[in-house]
Image (tube, rainbow, N blue to C red; front, side):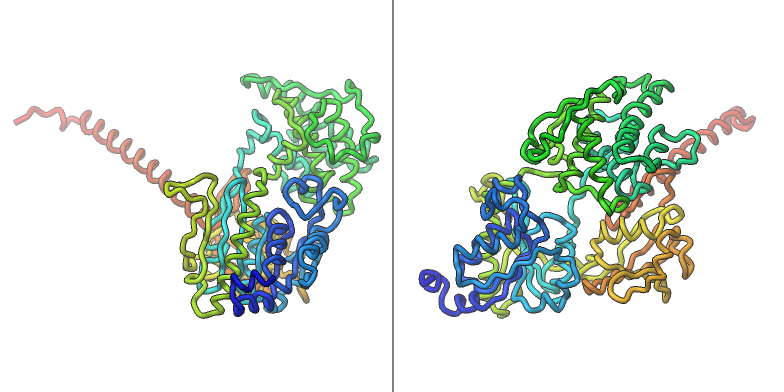
Length: 569
């Protein structure tokens, strides 16, 4: 490593060797980052990743080989990285960074943290822990040919949540349930079907009250679980792809549609035996299944998922073989019914997971930029603010007008309106009469806001809490509607206090009631403001139309009155 000392200087080389680095994620960026760190002289590295190696990782995560498939990413990455530099101390954990082990106190032992994550939820969590621990965080991300690296420091630069992240496109419920015309519609429907069968079924857009006289033909079959897994899977298949479609055809639901759907009659199918292909299921993800194969995979995956002890709580995971098999089969069956071209498991995974193909070169560039920012932080040694010493660097797909691919810009200051690092009040619009506390916790606090272990208070009343020493009796409130909660409930104008002691996070949420019929909405921050502005514009237009009508009516009345017919003087 003599050449490194000659290049970096003795002081910086010593700081690099003595620095304790936490790397979160050992995937596409993480592999490149770990390799860079051990070759740059860093002497003490901890890497955390909860994932295992999949066949699909091998084309871009170069520390892994085919014989590593199924093993821990963090542990294998450690073993291979040590071959580059055996003198480095690497500690690997095959765990979730959100587990209680990785507390604020745990983070404080590190000189800096480097994110190499591929999901927003974990990024939000690490962002908040680093803010609480006052530790510099080097954040990174890639999307195809695009990439970026930034540095986050509490009170000095903007945090990960200072700017809103793009959300996935939401498709109208009526299109998903009744008139799909694209494969993405079928895949969204299949994911909702997964939720209906194996997750929290009431949260699925396919759920209906079984007491309704006009309920869909599949509802009773979905609820009739006192049969074998094989029989249940067959019954649900017929309910979804045969009885329900035939019912809608009989009542002429599609009489004006461009395409008339075609039911799939289960008893007319000759299902193949998939057991002989069991060992190679994961290797043939680009093969297009026939209709009969789709049906067989639907039955097989349904039976497998029903054996999971967490049925009723499962969430779709694109990296779970059974879940992906189910969604691929269900989506293709739905596509066949509506005359849409079928897709392979590989294509379905890309759509279901909103995946843009990863580019290994982009990962390598971004990982290199992260190490350069680490050099800057250690060389600066607190002499200047982070925003003065470091940069936010973009990696572009093609040369810009100046002929460069990498664009470094100044780091932004914290957003004074950020509810995370500036702890500002945040607006939330939802239907307070229909939303339960469980839905509020799952869909707003955890899914939208990234809270890990929420404690919820209304005034001086704590209505729910999670974490160590949490009051178990408060779980009884989860099933209640927001308006039925203690302390006067959560209604229009209520300010809810949310805390997460594991993240040192506190937030005040201003509640706005949004009247809806069937649609479930959770409008947070700018989503609420946009909705409010659109509603105000709509109301103004209605007022204008009414005023115009009144003026017109008034003028007509004046024209028709006797006084208007008097001769002019």
